[in-house]
Image (tube, rainbow, N blue to C red; front, top):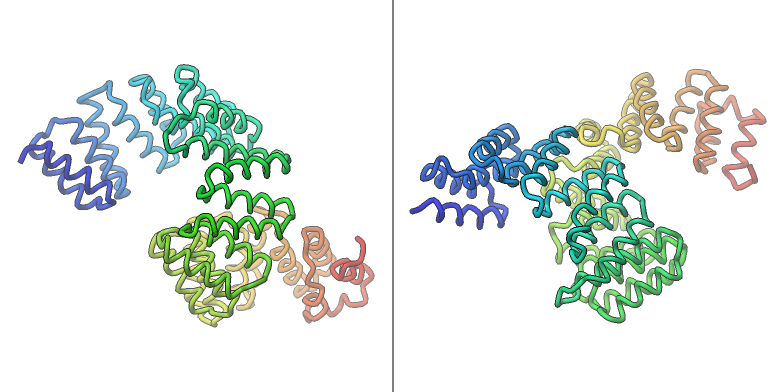
Length: 447
């Protein structure tokens, strides 16, 4: 068999996500044609998908040595640098890819997105414009530019790109234009132009009623602006127009859960969403929340374990499982999950607070305080951590500092006056005027 046949088989397997099998085919192709840069680059891509970064990098460098003007290996090296969070190398390799092939759009997309992630909106915009100035009719690139700037919270610039995409979109199915118009409506909403956003969503729905994204985003727009009944109506209309959509089911279920209404319906919808879109993590999270809301903790744990089946390092699933284990008295397993959550997301104040609670319960106040201080450093307005720090200081008899933390917690939204009234460590403060004032604020009195 010729190396072209092995290469073709490998590409097919890779597209199906069968990377180990794909690598075996590419290695057979390499044995037949050891100096073929296309084969070597394919090996590198597959090694990258298998997270074997050092070997992938070596393959891309070998391919580049054989064909210095090919953008493909440069893109591979840039993706390796992205995995390693090496900013200079990311930009260097993407710029060199553009130099090697100025007509290779993926390099502009990756570079623009990277600048957007880094908060460099002006550089992201300039990168996309380097392409769109020469290719003004590329609606996909204009949409990519708009999405990047939207994610960077530059909604005005995003709006301009989406409107430009609308004006040049030509795909026969109409998906480009509908996507651009939906994203334009999102931008209008984020710019505070609610009536215009609603009208824009409605226009898309009138023309393409089976475009689930418009229904979902219209519901989200209503909810963001405080119109909860309208939001629910939008989701329900979306379910009528898109009866096979797991996304609409998920959005309606999440809305019902947030409103604490129709919990059994929310559970049914979330189960249907998972059945229709099993590999979507967000559907599994909604299912976990729905099962918790209906007092099925074992079912919730099963949903979060399913998330870990898809992504063993998912920090939020580890956190939720840790909380469930702690509630069930399995402290050792809870700690394991909290540690895993913090490995992936060390700045998550909720994970830090949850982990601290284990030490607080075990009377290791010093370690608990250290973790809580980290949580507050990450988010100074995270009221659970502030309240817990108040408890620690009160247990030590440092009532002035405890009151300072309670005040900060109240400013951050703490309203559980009953906890402070009942907790024994605050008993010496029950006649303190400042403490009484803070309790009255938590009970609804003016500040």
